[in-house]
Image (cartoon, rainbow, N blue to C red):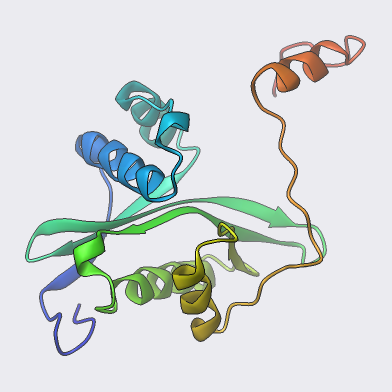
Length: 175
């Protein structure tokens, strides 16, 4: 898949279990760029389990001249308003030396095509508010910020604490 005139030897493929060490390396490189490396707790065993055994998420890899240069980790969500699934892009990373060559656009274009093919109503993601290069890139592609929404998160102790305050409604069965 040719990305632009400068990048004729580029392709995108779905990750396989053997790619787990590479996926973790890319996650750490992205976290370092985002100044959050100390927050990465994922292990190769975690990624193998949740990506390839339980299939909670998917990964695509971008390769230039058979060398990995980009990755995107995504999963399906659901829009009750649209009555359709969507794709949520958790991470998009392009190695610094490969930025500005059309790789990020190719990765997002692939995901947009996948969303259309899977009859999804939308493709969405979050971006750190200080990441001006990415914000400009996304706006250039036609994406719009969802400024009227605030993201909330429970994790760690606050998640466990709330789970313990459920009055016994959750019995540990998920079926």
